Amino acid sequence: MRPTVLCFSGLDPSGGAGLQADIEAIGQSGAHAAIACTALTVQNSQQVFGFEATSKELLLAQANAVINDLPIKAVKSGMLGTTDNIAALAEFLGQHPDYLYVLDPVLVANSGGSLGDQATLTKAFAALIPLATILTPNTVELRALAGCDDITEATQRLFAMGAKAILVKGGHENTPDHIKNTLWVNGEILSETTCPRLDGEYHGSGCSLASFIAGRLALGDTLPTAVHHAETWLFGVLKAAETPVPNGQKIPKRF
Image (cartoon, rainbow, N blue to C red; front, top):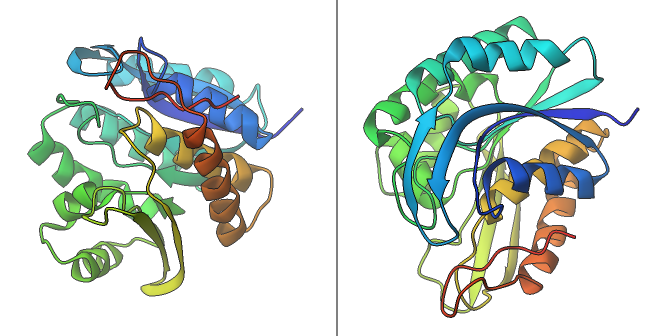
């Protein structure tokens, strides 16, 4: 069977982000996706209206049901929603130190709306940062996690917290004609990539990128190769994205 990525993420009814984005992206990477659902959300492609988090007991039960049944090589997390779920995932990863782990530190949906109390979640993420093979924060999440505005200083603060590698996504920066992503490894810049900024906003781009990276890592790619494949793939699916309503957020066309 194909190598498997176990995803800890929330269910997005619109299918643009969350677990559906994970499943589609990992499938496109060539790996298989298994699911531990962290929350049921009430949202569409434009806005989050609310959510109900899974209990930590149910979350761990989902994960433990498949670990001896599927060839899990990597874990990816997105929306975790509560500090209990963050602690549960840290416990799970501590029991399985051989799993590669992609941490997408989701705090707020791009479409707007809370996915948990940001201040509380930010502190709790400190337990997961040292366990991650790579973090994939956008610059808003990076600043929140580090507690400072300067991108370089914020990145170094995460390394001081135990991070091994960080892909800093530049989509939220004020660069009208391009987006720059920076891959940091062990406190140093390993590579920078720039792509043209596409028109509009996209629902689920971060989920898709992190999941594709996890899929490629599960298949045996090195970290730089996995990131390169994921960025190339994501740009293509964003160019082909579909718009549910006029002037609304676009949903990546992952197939």
